[in-house]
Length: 168
Image (tube, rainbow, N blue to C red):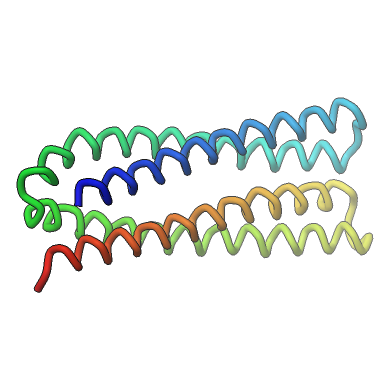
């Protein structure tokens, strides 16, 4: 059980570092593109990407701190009393699943909104500003959605391992 807990925390830290790296890299790339080719579309893309990059960096920092807190709180328990560990961990995973479902809904809505904006800008129903905003929303929300789905999958596998070892 201890090994599985360590692997779970490793996955959380890796996801956090990826989130922060992607957020910073995408914001830097959008800023470079706008500096090289200024225009309404790239200005809007820069705004959308930078705003969602802030969310990604915040989420990454929060995940790192949460993984550190979990390690300090639960690592001694998983070594000594696995049933007590399972009793604490399963309710936390339930809350996390509910939170992930809300995030998934928001990320899907942002992706659809971005697609609508990009379509309106691409079909010249609206200006270039909406096209850039839509492109930025689509890319960033797609990355967030993939990370959320991956985290949900990791949580489900981890929960299954806990319940299997806990027994009836």
